[in-house]
Length: 383
Ligand SMILES: Cc1ncc(COP(=O)(O)O)c(C=O)c1O
Image 1 (cartoon, protein in one colour):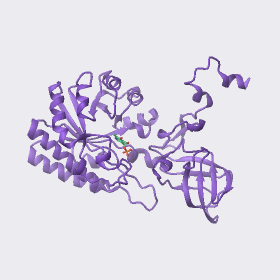
Image 2 (cartoon, helix red, strand yellow):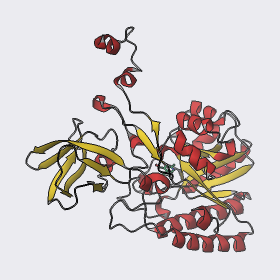
Image 3 (cartoon, helix red, strand yellow):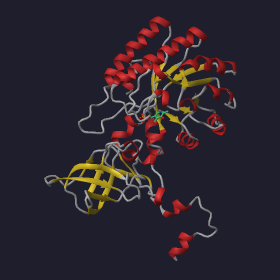
Image 4 (cartoon, protein in one colour):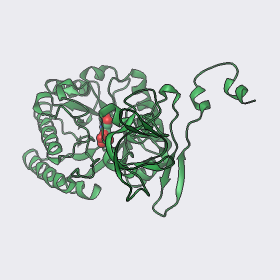
């Protein structure tokens, strides 16, 4: 990414911590020069714990509390990215450098099927007709340096859509200069660069995006006399294809359809249930077996707890391993404990072939940690 997008302008990706909030992974990314996009206090803590400096952290607010701003501004602060004009008055101390998330509304036609939805239905971002006023208010409160941000689509594989987003954002930058004399230091076109979940899906054409974006930045510089940096905050594009969920077949069941029951459930990967997302499944060692059509189901008491519906797979048997692909982003990170389901461990496969445990699996004790019984019934039960 850096090589190609570095041609467009001075470039940096702020890895969206929500995609894979594991310090071991974040440390590797930091060594590669990434910054971090955070939107909660624990994400800020994680980034700081691995040595991220204030300029390495972008805090993207949303429906944010004042306590969260205060946290983001501690320890030298972070690059504050405000989601609403009204937030200008709520930031405890206006930092020197501030940014706003722009929502272009009708200026951009985002596919309604996009997981974030239509721009005008989204809960995010400053309305286009309020954006200049937002910067004016921030400057009145003492901000001196500015950036500009947007994030309107998710898992978008059509590079032209991100080119269009860049075009709209650069036009907002032009208006800010014309109306307020503000030269934004960077434009952050967000994350949302898509990955191929299906083997037949096309990849995001990064070279084509870089080439078109460069033309837009070149033209912008010619017309306006300065060139903002280009930032992105991709999560999925960075780690998504490099993670898999490995699970074992524990039951073969014949309902009105054939079911393969596995020992993971949607608490480890909820994208299929939440977005009807496709994740390709491999059955190592099953090559040559007859193909059957099955649902791959977890153990949670929700009928949407299915990793695949009516999927063609080689015949599976109890004890087989299933490898569910492309779970390296928004996978375990979106996990939860409903139904007393515990989340699995995370293993890091390094390029030298070694494997490291980077998060242990949850235990029942973890599940009870927020309950104050006075006595530990879990331990008592084991005596
Ligand atoms: C503000 C913001 N930035 C970046 C991302 C990362 O998106 P992706 O992992 O699809 O690149 C998200 C994802 O929800 C987000 O909300």
